[in-house]
Amino acid sequence: MNDQLKNDRNIQMKELQTFDKFCRELGKDMDRDFCREIEDELQDCPECKVYYDTIRKTVQIYRICEEDEDLDESREKRLFKVLDLELPGKEL
Amino acid sequence: MCNEKQVGMSNPLNEEQIIDMAKAGDRNAQAQLVLKYEKKIYNLALRMMRDPEDAEDVMQETFLTALRKLHSFEGRSRIFTWLYRIAMNISLQKLRDNKKFDASVRLNDPDFESLHGRQLSEWPAYTRNMLSDSEFRDLLDQAIRALPPIYRSVFILRDIEGLSTEETRKLLDLSDSNVKVRLMRARFFLREKLEDYFREHPQS
Image 1 (cartoon, rainbow over the protein chains, first blue to last red):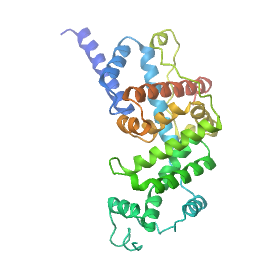
Image 2: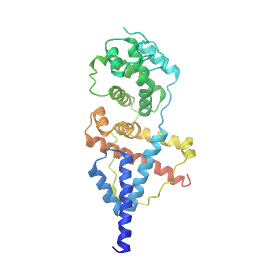
Image 3: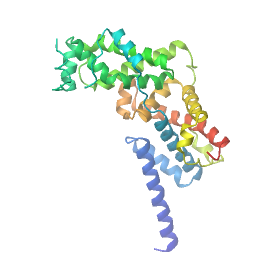
Image 4: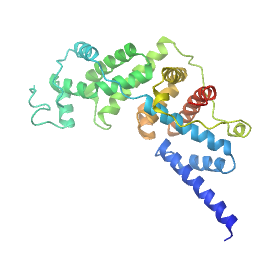
C-alpha cells in the first residue's frame, strides 16, 4: 500500500471515529441509517464537520448549564400543605 | 396505616412496597413518594416553564393529579416516568393556555445542501467563565424559551434529562421518527442561536 493511500485511509478512519463518537454522545440509540447519512455528509463536507461539532457543543453546553436546582424549603412546605401531607424526615 | 418507622427508616422498604402502601391510602407512604420525586419534578417543570413560580404550580398540580390517580398506576413503567408524563402534560397545557409562544411555529429540517456554501467557523472550547457569564446564560435561556414547546419537550427529555428515544416516545405519545425529527430540529435551532453569540464573541 503506498503512502498516499495509507494516509487517506488513516484520515477516513479518524473521521469515522469522530463520527462514531459524535453519534454515541448525542444519543445511544440514534439509529444507524441516520448516522450513516451524517457519515456520508462528513466525508466530503468540511462545513458539515464544523456544523456537527457545534451541534455536539450545543448539547454539551445545555447539559452543563441546565443543572438541577434545589427545591427551596418554602416551596416544599407549600407543596405538602397543598397535598395535605405531613412533611417527613428525609431519610428515604 | 403504616408508621414512620416502617417507611424508610431503620428498615427501609423498597419503592414497590411504598407505592403499594401509597395506593392503599397510606399518607406517610404518599409523603415519602412526594419527597423522593419533588426535586426531579420541580426541575423538569422549571426547564419547561422557565419560571420558578410556574414550575411550582406545575409541581403542585402534578402531585395532586398523581395522588388522585395513583390507584391506576399499574407499574408497567417506572414511577418517575409516570410522574414525568403527568408533569409534561400539565406543562404543555399551561404553555398552550398562557400563549407565550406562537403555536403555529414549525421548525425546518437542517438543509445540508446549503451548508456547503456557508462560512461556518469553529467554536472555541467553552470555559467555566463563559458558562457562568450572565450574558451567555441569558442567551441560553432566551434560545430555549424561543423553542416551541413541542420541540422543547423532546430536547429536554432526551438531551437534558437523558431519557431514551423509547421512553420519550412513550411519555409524549409520539412515534420514534417524530421524536428523532423534533430532536434534530430543536438541536439545530439552538445551535443557530448560539452561533450568533460565538460570531459576536470569537474570543469566548
